[in-house]
Length: 493
Ligand code: NAI
Ligand code: MG
Image (cartoon, rainbow, N blue to C red; front, side, top):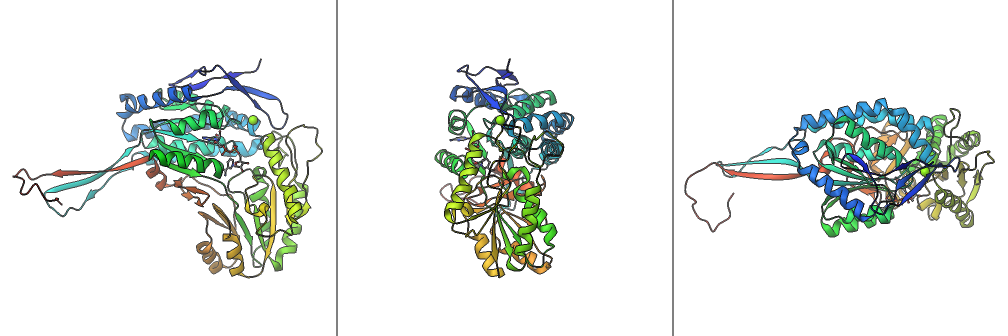
C-alpha cells in the first residue's frame, strides 16, 4: 500500500480536515511514491494558530537567542546524519541527480550553523539624543508567525534560506512545500522536533497553491510571507501581502546572462555555460539561459557547448553516471517542449537537441538543447523556460553587450567569463543583477547575501542582512529626568 503522510502541526502528524490526499510521482519512472495530505484553509488555520501559540508560549519566547542557536545547531547535526536519506527523498520526488541532492543536503548543516551563530548577534543600538536626559535605544524583535512557500526544484535548500533565519530571530514558521515535493520537508519537521524545537514552532501543511498556499498568505495571524517560485505567483502573493501590510521576501524567476568575452578561457567558459543551463536540467532560478558570446569566440564556444551537450548522459537520476535526469513533472516537460517549438516558429534554429531522448525509462526526459539565430526580442530569450534550453547570442562590443544583457525583465544573476581584471569589475558594476559571478557560475553560500533585482524579487536571502527580513525594529525612549514636565503642548526631543 502507498505510504501516506498527514500535515505536521504542533509537533505531530495530523490528518487533513478534508481527509483528502494526493499522490506524488517519481518523474523518472512515473511510479507513485507516496500520498500527502491535500491541505485547505482549515489546516492552514490550525497550523498558523499552533505557530502563534508557540510564538507566545514560554517554551519558545523565553529561550535566549543563544539557546535558539543551540537548537539550530542540533538540527544542522541531525540533517547531516540524515543527509543521504533526505537526498534520496528529494531525488525521487523531483528527478534531480542523487549526487546533486546529496551535495545540497551535505552542505545544508552549514546554513543552520551559520544562522545558529547569528542568532545572538542580532542587536539594537543606543541612539544619540538631542536631550541628554533621554535614553533612546533600539531593539530587534521577531515578527511572529512566518509563512514559507517553496517550490520543488531544491526543496530543503530553498526552505532553509527562509526558516533558518526566521527561527534564529525567534519567529515560528508554517511551511507550505510544493505539491511536487512534500516528503523531505515533512521529514525536516520531524527532525526539528527531535532536535528539541518546542511543538508548534515548525509546522508543515502540504497541498496545492490555490487550496493551501493562498489561505496561508491570507491568514490574519500571519506576520510575514517568504516565497520562492514563479514571478506570476510571487506578484499575486505580494499584492495580498500589501493589502494586509505584512512584509514579503520574494525570490522569483530569472533569465540570467552568461557572458563569454574574447579574452576568456573558452574551454572553462564552455563548462560554465554547461553548468549554468544543463546542471539541474536548467530547473533553477539562476539558470544561465541567455548565453552571450563575443563574435571572435562564438564559433568555438558554440562547438564546445554543443559537443558537451550532445555527450550528456541522460537517464536515471539515482545512477552515478547520469548527468541529466527528467524534468520534474509533466507540465514542466510540456512547457519546455512548447517553448522550443515556439522558438523555431519565431525563427530560431534548434542547433542541437530539441526533442525527447530514446530511453528505457518512461519519465519526463528532454534533451539538452541549444538554440541559435535568436534575437533579444524573441519570447524564448525573454521568458523563463526553466529547462535545459540555452539561447546563444553573439555580440561585438561591450556597450552593445551591456545593453542586451540588461534588456530583460529579470535581474537575478549574471556570469562573466573574462581574463581582464578591469573589464570584470566594470561589468560587475554595469550589469543589472543581484549576483555576479566572474569565471564561475552557480556558486552559493549562506554567508553571501542575494537579492533579485527588477522582477526577480524583493528582499534579501542569506548573509547578515537576511536576519533583518525576519525582525522588526523598535525604538525605546526613556526619560531619566524625574523633574516636572515643562510645556506639555510642544513636541519633545
Ligand atoms: P509556482 O510559483 O506556482 O509554485 C511555487 C509554490 O507556490 C508552490 O509551493 C505552489 O504550491 C505555491 N503556489 C502556487 N500558487 C499559489 C498561490 N496562488 N498562493 C500561494 N501559493 C501558491 O510555480 P510552479 O507551478 O511550481 O512552476 C511553474 C513555473 O514557475 C516553472 O516552470 C518555472 O518557470 C517557475 N518557477 C520558478 C522558480 C524559481 O526559483 N525561479 C521555482 C519554481 C518555479
Ligand atoms: Mg514528484
